[in-house]
Length: 178
Image (cartoon, rainbow, N blue to C red):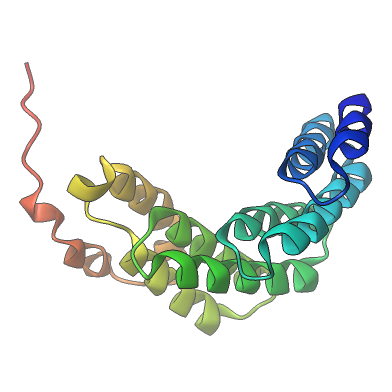
């Protein structure tokens, strides 16, 4: 908090260094289990992000997603849902429909919807998450790793495994075993 106070004195409230300190404090308090303080710092981070970058900047989507996770932990799932929807919208506008972080945000959104007993919408989000994953060659294999993380959710919604195949992973060369 001393570093935050110093940065505020040096740069003013609306500066990326202040935002960075706020985000760092939010993450710190989240790790320590002080959810109320973490939420306060996340909200301050969002306010500074919006003033610095605007309401639709991709940097803001990350903090919205982080705060949504905390809100879900605190059983404020409706509030988390609106933040997750906004994070998805911002990220998709910024990078387009093929992005592993977008897929992660959609996966989280599906989880929120499932928590609120909205399985049909959760299924739509999961399908979009699978479609958002980049090809393994484009993502260094991250898309495949993310898809494996999504598989339990896909099973939960009784989707068939053939939904995963359209990503053309069959083009991925086999890894030689030595």
